Image (spheres, rainbow, N blue to C red):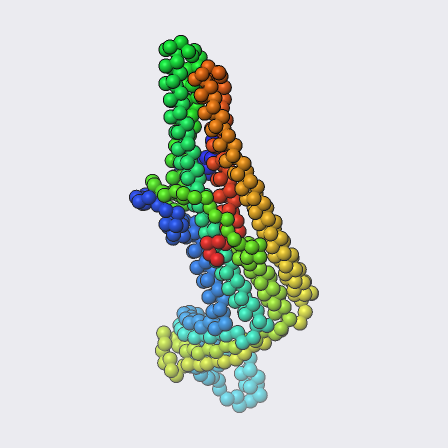
Length: 458
């Protein structure tokens, strides 16, 4: 029965929330809760929002940027002070040393004047400087680079959406399998309890036969040992059910104590191979990756084009904050073209690498399609094999039941030993468990096929 236990349950039992789902939960209700409450799905949804924010940022680059720049300074550096005055439109002739200027009357006085250092210009007083500036820059043409980045970010958002759908698919697969595993455990427990009742009846019958001298003590010990073995299996299944409830609680992020198990086997989906390839998430992700690499080729080729941008500035400056702002205002408008003509072949190498990545991704898309086709064919073949196995095991179980009843009757008539009866009963239990496991494997393979077909989101 170790096959029935889910190994992952032991690491997950502490993860469910304290909120309890009190009513018996159906599979459809569990799937709805799963989509809204599962923590991995919530994390994937946040990844989508982050990708959308990146896409919005890429789109925003087309609108340029507007900056407010406020400079505050104080200096007695000659160049700075003169520049401050000139920027605030307050420079005068005195700043050039005209206060020390006198008209020369002789050539000698003229020569002396030329080498005179104006103190007002070289040693100005300290001056404050406040400049308020609005600056707007906008790209006019980027060689289609910005459009390429915008398309890439939109594709990345789609990629994150597909990744979220893949997680949803995986979790739905796990919750479905858990519900059908629970059905298997309950059905197997029910069959084993029926067998346990039969063993108890056989134990009573054996004791009565011992009392009248028609059986031996060893026969009773064999029956009691078999009863202990069946009780052990029932206890294993009971504990496995508890673990399974912990796992379902983890998946739903709610404490679940009771579920309504499916009463029928999972139906075979009617998807064709082409249907599955058209909706498979791995194929869609590979195709989205191909679109991204195609855009990357365009982004790389943008280096072959000139870059054109425009800018505009509006400013005012004074030795006090916004002093005489209207009188000291200034503007600048302009445009700039940048065109790289040579950089040692680096851009060409980058373009070539982008094209190679695109070709590689084309191969990966084809590989993804071939891989999914292989998985689909493998799963369908496994389901057909399990259908044949289930049909055979049903017949074998009917035969095992009949043989056990026959040997039980023969034991009453002293025509067979208790060991023979116990052996036939063990074969009966084995066939019951084999049949249940075959049903479980078939359901699991059907859920795997639905997962490949993106069944819940088609």
